[in-house]
Image (cartoon, rainbow, N blue to C red; front, side):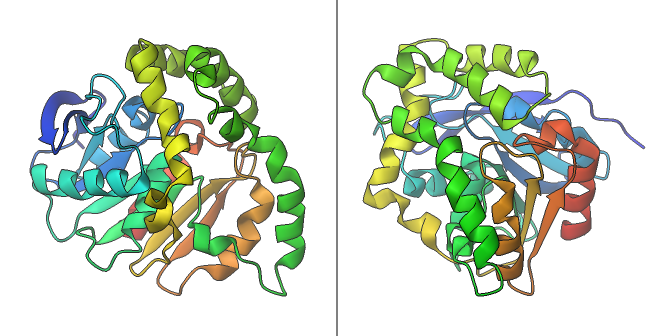
Length: 290
């Protein structure tokens, strides 16, 4: 077995900005593009990626638009449409094949869920963590109880979305907000290393504004692709202690999943399950893409 604990780093050019990429695994391996979320960085994959790379996969994790060392986009667009365009462009510039995989967490999951809803997706398999397809949130008679339970509690988890709409507020206090969110979203997890990595990726007000602009763009028409239903195989993973997206929604999502897709509740994990339970997450991904 060839171990791949440390990534190589390089930049690629996307339309409108450059993307800094961390890559684990053999250069000729099957491509896995791994997208991070908020408030996080591409280093969120540092525990799962080596496990995937050790099986021969090539895991490429870009810093999303607006997160240094990636560039701030020329058009200032942080809509889901723009994120989907980046994900599709990355497949091309990284030389992905017909068997490539798109993997996303949080905002990366929202992007992945949008891409899997597009029949033109260049990826063969799609894996999303911690945020399900929005279309999956509609209950049936069998899941109305779980849905109602989650709906009652979700506003207490999602207050930060409203805070991020206030111009100047969240960007000035982003790192304080991030520390609070990590504590509540993944109870018991020591996020000190991740928060330091976030400080490097969001070093100033301009980058902080970019990070919160994802939420401000949610209110526009650019959210449209995130509402699509999957048209290709999708694996959805959710932590049973997630403090961001209430785990009580999981039965709703699991029952809704198409026959070619799968939903898995990961025990003992919060919102950042790829960091908290990397072996379990990697095993589920490998079983799905094999």
